[in-house]
Length: 194
Image (cartoon, rainbow, N blue to C red):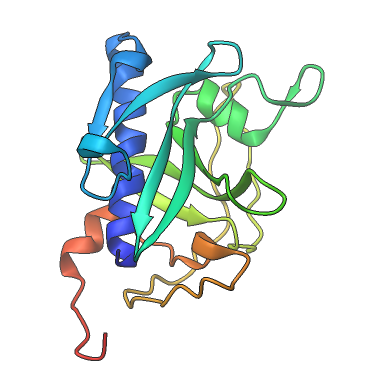
């Protein structure tokens, strides 16, 4: 898979999680189908996490001949630093932001976050943005006058629209994906050297 295909796939799964949540459907009855899913029929069903509170998917993805087990689940709105003090992501989720985390389950130690996705509304159209875990630029959140509202105050890193080869010996794996706004993928141009 190309990086843009990986990002599209992860955003598709994230969108399925929140479509199920908005419709109030049972996540275990929601299926996603994609040729890269390494299950018979290329179909994976959703499941519940954290005692039936969070929706998500465990999806084995076939990527360039290797099966990579991913877990994609929504942000826990009750995630706290200390009792009663929620993380900035939890506050954002409580305020209605759609955030989904992507975890590689085959790393050592297992279950390492490789990044997250957030929804973005532009002129009433919902798109998704990918934030790789290796993105170490400082991001502060500022709470507005309404409890739970926030805004990012750090300037985003410049977007790169080139494919980056995945080195299977790189312990960070997909964490090196460039930050790409899913709405901008149609403008990507394939290189003759890939």
